[in-house]
Image (cartoon, rainbow, N blue to C red; front, side, top):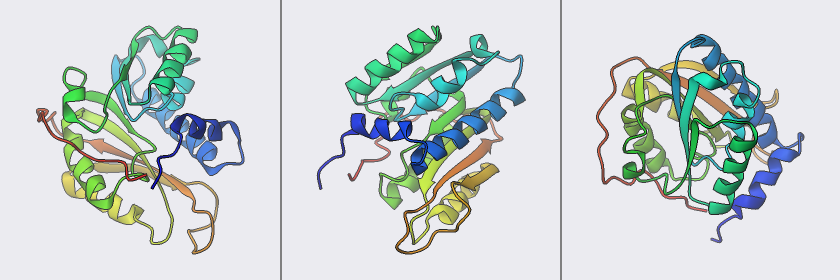
Length: 219
């Protein structure tokens, strides 16, 4: 199966009628809610497969607590990372680093985790079910105490999101939110809604295990 053009994919966010654009608005709202809960605090963020960083950079561009946020966006595609750098610089976000690297390998995160906010958006719809579970089981290694993980996944039939939520809870995460685009539940033959979940890690950070591959994109 041929790989999608992940640069052209980013253009889908420009069309408000696309479900991914609607999903982006939900993700940004949940990020704002997280930042509101940490108002006045220094917070760190890590974004896995960040693309052009439209979610977090779009929020921080005009956020009153932007100077309190530091973070790292990890993305393999150099064209997307160049655009993320441009967006961060344009917004004056000099505490946000952009790394062109393999987000699926734990070594990439040495020195940048644990974080207070972990974004795993646009990942779970492009990797196999076993890799989703593996990634969720490793996420405590990315999380500081009381960190929030925001994740996304389509709800195509058969809908895996109930299982994903169960996997998060089985590891020890506490669900904060779960919603999806549109009013309809997923139905066969219909373009699937896009879901956004948020989970909190209530425990202490877990040491990062190096040398592990968490997932591979299957398309």
